[in-house]
Image (cartoon, rainbow, N blue to C red; front, top):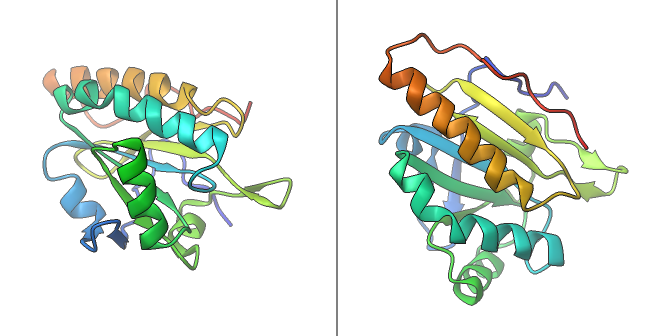
Length: 171
């Protein structure tokens, strides 16, 4: 399974959200940049903390013109309950068979736990930043905002879509 890296085109996907809406990458990027983050499972301590951190910073993401989605293999029903319980303003997508996770090359930790990886994708569909850390769940928010600020600055200056920051390795 090849991992998607900085500078690669982001693989397209069509997945169903907690509200039954079909979401694909092209639609996600209509406004500008996108943040796609994969996480292990609804209602676990790390995933709940991560979701809350993204929720609390959601206004900053929208100010930067970014759409945010999270993806796991949990069911639509599980996502709906989780989103309602946590007051999440963004969509959670169901990748029941793990196809999109495989397209992005998101591996499992210790071969058992689905990986936690965040991708920042520019409006042209190019991966601009990758952050992977199973244990530092809430750090994904800080890393994504930092990368989005850089992308927004470059796009505002009409610079080409090049990765300025190397992909992070798992911590």
